[in-house]
Length: 324
Image (cartoon, rainbow, N blue to C red; front, side, top):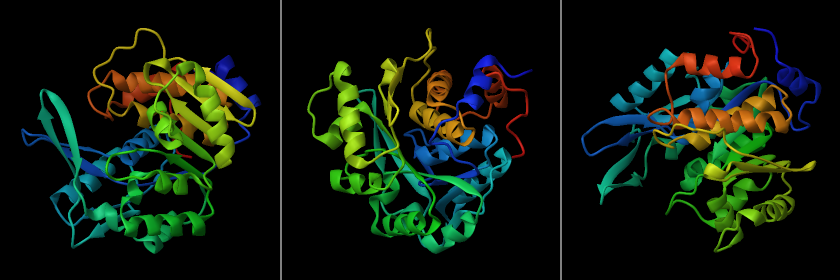
């Protein structure tokens, strides 16, 4: 398949915020443990890395797992998907991360189990795994819930010198406004949903018509290159030095569940940065892929054809993104 007009436009007008090289993804890998005993592998950074691998970017994944059956399952899943495991640290003292899922009145309740392997990240080991020829350093806010991993994250950010993409993931009680703003400080790109933006700017109500102004104020105050604010079914708003753009999800979205939609969006945004797409091109692609993930059960899928169809829908030839 030849390049579409849209793909050609993306390359002729690349984003001024674009980068090149393998992305580095830092953060928690964990299992959602359900009342029936089933265990589902996930964690927002892991979900992002999974999608990036399928899109051909071969991310460097920095995380820590226990020397247990769950940790072995994480590495096995990564191996089967073709992901590098050099950055997966092994902890012989604490277990792999878990989220205990319970049902209350038919609604799920999530408890992120404290003091797990990913809370004990080793910054020096991470830097060794990162090496060179990398592009962007992606992390969320949950990885900073422990003193150890927060300090390791700071070491990695400072020593690597990579531009930083922060994807907030505000999960009570594991965050504070001051702590998240410290992570945002020095980042080049930040992604928040509108609820998170309001909590960080201390707004009690949300007016969709006013989100652009709130985003502009926050972006300017924090010195960001781009601020992406997702709005659920209303799409997303992107604030950059070139102004503000917005987009809506594609029509007739088939929703199985919305788990991982934000992670899917982030993965495509990073893909756009590395592939030098203009934001006006990346935004509909990110919204479209997030909608695709809403159509499958869970946050990730091993259906490689879904990724192939997605890339062909963007006008790219089969296999174009592989082997970089």
